[in-house]
Image 1 (cartoon, rainbow, N blue to C red):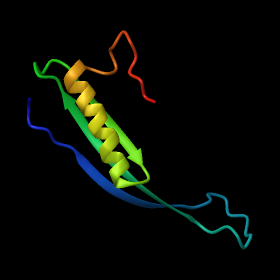
Image 2 (cartoon, one colour):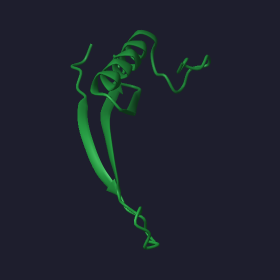
Image 3 (cartoon, rainbow, N blue to C red):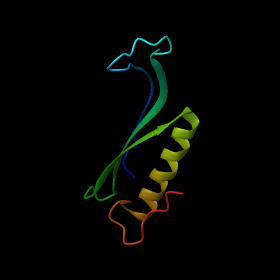
Image 4 (cartoon, rainbow, N blue to C red):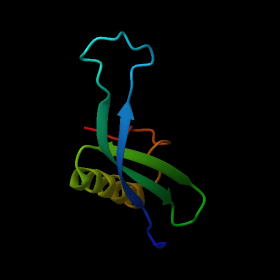
Length: 88
């Protein structure tokens, strides 16, 4: 197997109302998230897929990414399968 590499990032961004109404409850929303960039390449280097996984918790991101990577390396590309990947 080729060397595996992925990036797990913590994100924090603020959402503001584009057209403020002037009401007292028009506070910006602070959104927190974790993002895993998961580039996958088959053993023969002919097929590659990139997945971006977002989750509320870091461990959830890592676990879901690990399951996708494991299935990709065991069974081949996920998006081109005749039998669709079971996302549940």
